[in-house]
Amino acid sequence: MKKTVILAALITVMVIIAGCAGTSKEIRIGVAMPTQTRQRWNQDGANLERKLNAHGYKADLQYANNETALQIAQIDKMIDEGCKVIVIGSADGYALGDILDKAKNKGITIIAYDRMIMNTDAVDYYATFDNLAVGIIQGEYIEKKLGLKEGNGPFNLEITAGSLDDSNTLYYFEGAMEILRPYISSGQLIVKSGQTAIKQCAIPHWKEHIAEARMYEILTTYYNDDKVDVILCPNDSTAIGAIGALKAVGYNTADKPMPLITGQDADRKNMRAILNGEQTMSIFKDTRNLAEQTVQMVDAVIAGKTPETNDLGNYNNGVKVVPSFLLRPQFVDKDNYKELLIDSGYYNEHDLAEQ
Ligand code: BGC
Image (cartoon, rainbow, N blue to C red; front, side, top):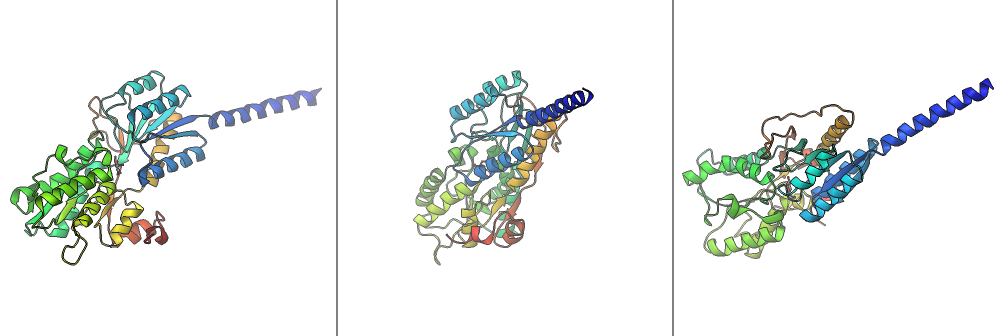
C-alpha cells in the first residue's frame, strides 16, 4: 500500500516535470521577416529560427515577399496563434501601427529587428546594427581612399539611397552625407546629376533593377564626355544595380576603370565583385550576432526580466524612444575580408570563389 502511494506520487512528479518541459517547448515566438529576395534576410530568418528552437521555443518564421498586406496577415496569425514575442523585420516600417495595437492589447512583446517600426507605441525593443555608423563608415572610406582630407579632387560622385519606407535609409543617409556634404560644398566632390536630396536618390525596396535603371539614366545623361569616380550605394543590391549600369556603358575596361563603389551586407555575390575589382567595399554586419542578441532579448522577456540594451536615446520612432541594442558594423574590402569573413567562419573561400 505504502509502495503504491510512493509510486503514484513519483509518477505525479514525473508527469508535472514532463508537463513543464512540454510547456516551455510550446512558447511560440513569431519571426516576421520582410523578404527572401536578399541573402541577408534568409540568413537572419534561419539564424533566428535555429537559435530560438535551440533555446526551447517554437519559432514561427514567415517571409512577406516585401508586401505590407502579407506581413500584416502573417503577424495577425502569429497573434491569434498565441506567440508571446514577435520579432519583426518590417517590410514597411510605417504601416504596422494597427496590427501592433492588437498585439499590444494581448500583452505580446514586439522586438523591431534591424529596421525600426515607426509611429507606434507598441514596439518594445529594437535590435539592430548602428545605422548611422553604416553611413559614416562608407563616407569615411570614400574620404580616405580619395584623400579628400588632404585636399584632393575634384572627383565626380553620384549618390544612391535606400528605400524610403525603411527608417534605416534616413540614418544611413544622414551618416554618409555628414561626411560627404562638406566636400560637395567645397567643390572637391561634384555631383553632375545634381541629385543630392534623399528623395531623388532613394531606391524603392532597395531593388537592384531600379538602382540600375536610375544609374543608367544618370550615366547616359550627364557622363557622355566624362567619368564618374565614386558611386555611393547604401547596400549590396543597389551596388549590383550600379555595376550593371556602368558595364552597360563601357566601364570596367582599361580606358574606363570602375569607380569606387560602396555597399552593405557583404553578400557573397558582392564579395566576389570586390575580389574581382568591380565593387570596392561593403559593410559587414555579422547577422549571427544580431540573431544572438535578439534571442537574448526574447529570453529576458520570457523570464520577466528587462532585456539588455545599450542605446536609450537615439531611436525615436515618432511616438516613443525605443530601448535599443546597437551592434557595430565594420567595412570589408579586399584587404581585410580574410580576417573578417573567412577567419570568423562567416564564409569559406569556396563561397567567395567565382561561380
Ligand atoms: C538593411 C540592409 C539591407 C536593406 C535591404 C536594410 O534595412 O539594414 O542590411 O541591405 O535593408 O534589404
